[in-house]
Image (cartoon, rainbow, N blue to C red; front, side, top):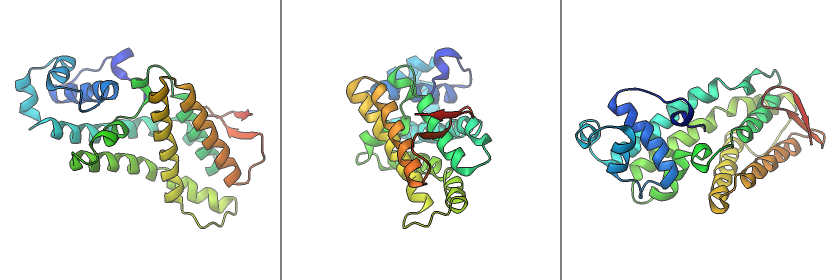
Length: 221
């Protein structure tokens, strides 16, 4: 996801600024390594302001996951991949769009809730659950198109729209991990390309036709 604070600074109350700071700082250095001082400095607020809005760092983590879900939901709702008539084209364009936004520094395109989940799944179950709600909530937005694509293209399968939607997120989160491991976004983009090929094979689309681009035009590979 793009970082609004880098190119289009946001303004808001202290709580919003702390959530924005959590979004950016935690993606950059992780939850455990992020201190209250880091967050307050990035947000431009005092520790008193922090504790006015959040009981502790865990409470901020839970709120940050919800804030991520809210803001990214709006971002994806306005994305151009929704404009295609064929539901399979919408799904393929979604994947193309996810590749398109893998740009910039690691902290600019990697996922806040994925980052936190990897760290806190055992130590902070409340944050883990909030992250899960965000990840699976986003996956659920793909299910209607997957279901419609299955019907439109005569796909009878032993898998469900929910399981395929979850798989897309597993690939994306894994792609982010590989990018972090190598310090190179190219490997993440390659993984998304493989997801696109998998979907083409799954739905029986002719090899070499990658379907619509994120912006709506055909692409060929």
